[in-house]
Image 1 (tube, helix red, strand yellow):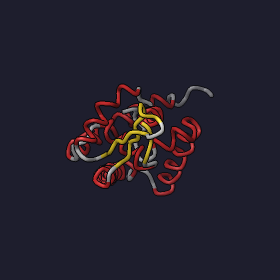
Image 2: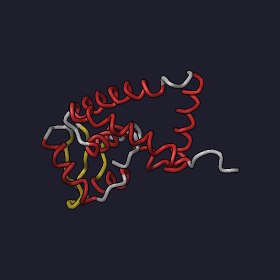
Image 3: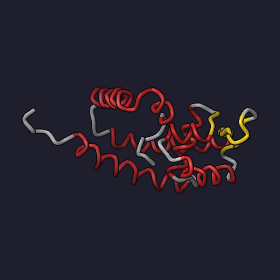
Image 4: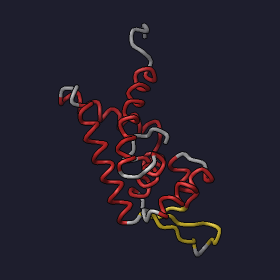
Length: 156
């Protein structure tokens, strides 16, 4: 390489910041935090998990997400039940209302993303999205990828 292009992080970081900034008003309108959206997205893709497994999949410390889970449960967006095989563990599952809200947020976020993607010709847009999927799958691996589907992967 002769250094004629910027580093990938230098190109991606401003785009990521702009996309996250565009998500914030959508999340506020739907009364969700970024972490709440990440949790609901992970649960919508694989409905029942232990709290520990959920934390691992979304890349959060177990103790970090307890408050998020409390809030989501209080809002009726998820349910927690004790694991009968291990009384210390709790299963976490998304509710119908949680699924509805998460999908409404995702639809609105993706409508906003379409305005950004509209700057690319259709063939370039398809190639860009395919390339992002391949790179994300390669970097994150199957376990992490399954939990982050439907999120922007912003490390929320």
